[in-house]
Length: 488
Ligand SMILES: [Zn+2]
Image 1 (cartoon, helix red, strand yellow):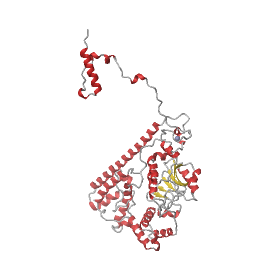
Image 2: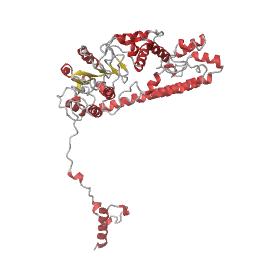
Image 3: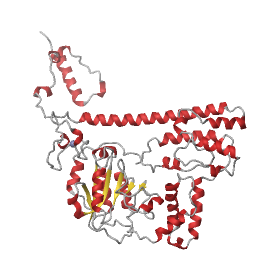
């Protein structure tokens, strides 16, 4: 999760372009970003309501952020909309929240990015997205319900309520059928193990899983459902994970079978997919202060309403269309036409600066492309290496891709779990090459006729005083023998 994918190259390009744009006219006007303007108003209005005391400032702030994320694409957001939505939350009661320390261990170890069962007040900030069983919570940024959302290609954490347990297991089964790397970590009652075939990671009954430390966990198990692609795209460091889990609570028990299933495979040595919560991507998503944002595709576009107080109507229209320019054109060096028209009116000859801007865009884009190519090549090479390590398939094993074992792509070094063999060769431990008995004579020093001919051997070693003692003594004996040898 520490990786940032291509974000580093992108932010480099944005910084360089920003420096040039700051030298242009118009960009000096300090505009308040649309996000901060709206969120400030919502916060102020919410504070004036009767029920505001039930929410802390931090909670209100996080709610305005969720509300902004869910509504930012709308050209017009009603000012009272936030307070109205907030009123509906007052009447609801929510289950106790999970301990942040426990969730952090799970997020980092399993590269999780979606919280499957959450609510607007208590979704954990370590997840990129959250789902809620209540359809009304979409207004605060929920993806929808876990049961209805398409979460293939994502890594979810699911703690279903008792009523939706069978549907949640069914949905998980469907999700991991996807060819995209998908995993779901579930917190299920231990008694339900008969209803699924997922991997039981740990039994956590009695562990302090809730934020309130006094509350103890009921009879729950941490269960992992994943497809074989997920195991390879987001590797699990089992040694680190089991140590962290055991360190978190002494009451946690890891089944011996799970432990041996992980330990008998050779883990891959690369990082999981980058999380969107990395520093660079967060920086790119923030709204910048300024009237140009066509170089920042992740931030929300500067709109007409923001520009209107600062500029005449015609300039506002031109600036709005400049900001709609596609980033993919810009990185090819194609700048918005309206920018040229606008600058020509104010600056006269604007070609040198436009040329500089176009080249900066192009080379920045080239760097992003190069980094992308490098990452793709790296990934293909890794996968190819893994396939080469595996023994060639037998004639009957043509349908290799049908294997559903999550450990399919990992080499089995030894058979610790003692599981029954399947049709797929991945269930078989890779045996070491048989020891071939070597001829004893191969260990002996080769003695040729020249080596016995002491008469012609150079008596003094070229190594001088640096030779080892044993060798020096032999040579001395040789010298004496040579001096006493008188041929007839
Ligand atoms: Zn297999």
